[in-house]
Length: 491
Ligand SMILES: [Cu+2]
Image 1: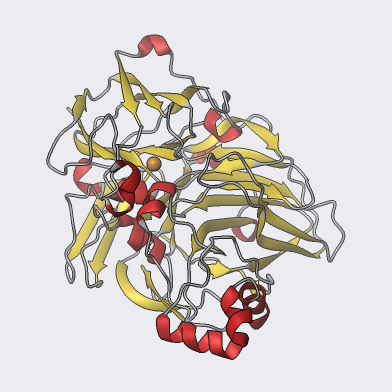
Image 2: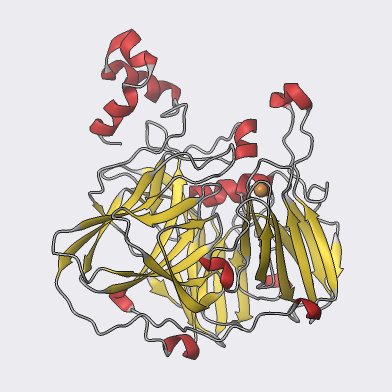
């Protein structure tokens, strides 16, 4: 943390004025490993660190390990990574290719890898039952069999997912195909992956994952907004179009993405690839686990223009959404011309008809009673249909090839639940209550959908032939780890 930010923070604490002096506070904080702040307001930095772009690889060997990274400029933090740094490389492969990824677990605890959004066999999906013990390895081997899109990978051991993702285990997994290549979207230096995550960090720069029971309910938020593992970064861009793939890899924080100058940008894709038609927006909610594929046009700006990607306030119930904050800075630093014209028509997406559905299921997302008024010391439990996750219990089965409609019912709840289904990509039919509408990213293929307080969201999907056990769960990772997950089996 830089001195200027520290002073800004310290001046808000009574300790600073009562006892007097930064030196004292620094010392005492080092000793106690005191948290930076009791409130979780975002601390904006000075956007003076160049963004890191993860290496692009196909079929890497991945090793989960404890390592170090410079999240805050000039400082070192102990983190987890799939490389000698926080996060992992960007895996990029063609549809139809064979993924053959050796995974070594060099952590001191169990982990595994879930390929979020990929349609892989059940025994390759990183089900919490399929664990790679500390010191062990596993070969992930599956054929990529789906359309181009921005997918990602992260651990999925039950009760440990949130901590491990927070510590830095995550990476993007981009699938390409011929159809998408035909769109000639901005590529190479003009295609930027952004993994947005919030971190809570102690005064000694160690990461602080220690949710209270209240934070297990509301979600654990950090004050330091990081992009690709770097706090408060900038990126230099040319006067042309850019494709930006955004992944919300946070455990609980939602971002309402907008540009600081109020300019619109173009949403071209969601979790499961490009949309049917591009949509211009001024802001876009992105919940944990979700991805947005967007185009930004920098062509009309003069050299030296600075534009921030920021998060605007939004109605997030009691849990979050009150603050506006900057995420990263784009600096327009050079003149370039391109002939790119954003296509309005992107892909043929055939809506699945509700008449194809052979079964409707309802998922009640109300939280379990957690001990009434003296609940602070009670174990917090999140449930789906009143049930907490049981590794060995199959909660229901679906037929391979069958089409079903699932309703996520969050009416009567004040919590936020981004719901994720493994093993399938779905379409969002409708949302009733709350926002009462679908946003741009919800008009394409999805694997994660945000269900705000008071909302009911219906999704429709046809299950693939990958038979076996998969999970569905809340991608607020604190909720997931506290039981908000069910098993389903494709038979
Ligand atoms: Cu949840």
